[in-house]
Length: 73
Image 1 (cartoon, rainbow, N blue to C red):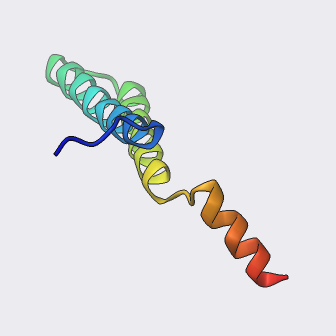
Image 2: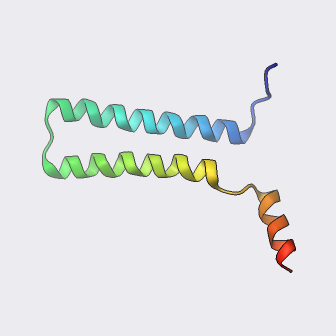
């Protein structure tokens, strides 16, 4: 069955699209030729988008974070 669209699924798909877009753009311009500073910027963009994708998938939901905070008290 189909699942309803949630904010979490939109964030996951959006971050995956960001990784794909930044990687494809960096690859395209790398094929055309880039200077070392452009390579550094492209690498930062790709690593940044991967970081966003990892954070979206591993960041605890508000309910889990509240439950863990209450368990510590």
